[in-house]
Image (tube, rainbow, N blue to C red):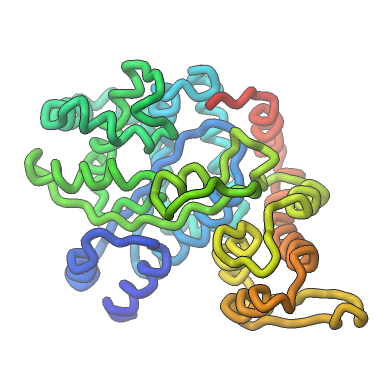
Length: 357
């Protein structure tokens, strides 16, 4: 694959790419390119973290990128997830890895790195301190959305320190590319600004789209803050589809989901078709009785969207078909957790934990 082709594939992942020319130069000249994504182990894993994450990692791997998945257990601890219980957080981290094993992620090109393993490295903390010394408190507070917080929230000192740690993570992992959601944009921009000042490099940022939750989105103009408010969240279980949800759970949740007739914007059902289903299938079939037009087949997402906007596809039929395809994609994960006793035990433990914001 030529560098330009690799770039085009990575741009399919990124709703935004900061440093596109730098990325193309990297693809032309560096043999082993490292990307990283970090995740807080903080509860059950939903399809935005599971299916979409696997799709994006596999595209990056196809473009020749090696992925480091940062299991940010200390970060979740600092952010008071699961009541600040580090033992529970570590169990959730192990559970996440098992989900990805079952979800079709290209694990030949993925390396899982635990944050707790870095905590005894004084060079890591030296970088954390360097970031803190180069940043005003006001600037750090502006990045708190990376934790699902805002500068208006009551924050603990550990949460204020979190962005300094996340910035240091990038350089500790020797990551050329930060491949995270749009909600992580502010800290990646901070890393680009501070990298050269600290004797490091300027990391490229590839920010993927954040999948919507199932509920009606808030009104307002398109901003990163609004997208964060709309995204799928485990703290609102009825607005999220989890990777180990039953067939019936998926059908029930999608049946109740927000899906306004003839509207494509801010429509979670169409989003799941675009970012998940059509990434996995070539044809999308909506089955319906002859009196309602009979079965109809779509060979591209754009064709499906156009038909929906014209009113040729009813929301109820779209929901039924989408539930069928999502369930087909989740079935291997369900089977994995049924047959693997170690994974099943982790799942049972995680589901017993109370999720905290």
